[in-house]
Image 1 (cartoon, rainbow, N blue to C red):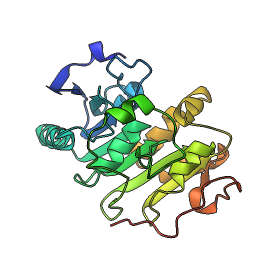
Image 2: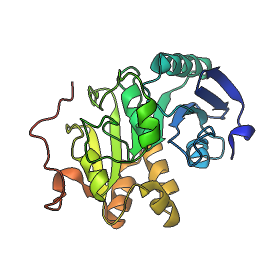
Image 3: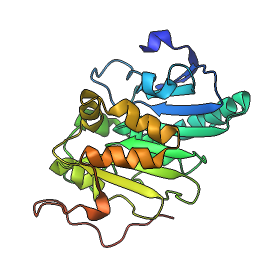
Length: 254
């Protein structure tokens, strides 16, 4: 499903928000990653999984500037659209879903909105060089960001939102993963022998859709069994290689 097939709901500068109507009472907010074409709007992320055959209402959030939510006023524009849509459909639950940059944006937005849960695949802890010096990807887009109101993933609210975060064990992925906050309510997993393409790898194994839908449908037992069968390791049980970043002594959650 392409962006051309999903009606545009809101546009402001590089920000595009599209809305796909559903039949149920759940709203999924799907945040796009960087995409593969620099001059093209990043395509909708997880359209089939988020929609679940049109059962769910879905907002697809795309940032053509690739600012990791640091664009001027972007967080507030997104927040207003989420609130208005949730009120319009009388949403019982609102769930955020994102991949890479989109996962980071979903995590940042949970500081301002009570998502029932956030599902983030390979999010970046930060795109600032001084925060994650090991990161050498997306240099072009990172250099375009002029201010950083969201310098790192912090101030998560596990008392209000359940978090599910997934990273591969490639060294740059671990550089981000090991810096993330840790607290009850933040379920963070390492997928062995994978890199930044965790979601694509799971899709190739036929596991991405059932895994995410178990989370969206509130079936944690089925999710955890499936993840275990796939080799997923809770980050607190993961032993990083000696060459990986040493875990910080403490990471703030509040």
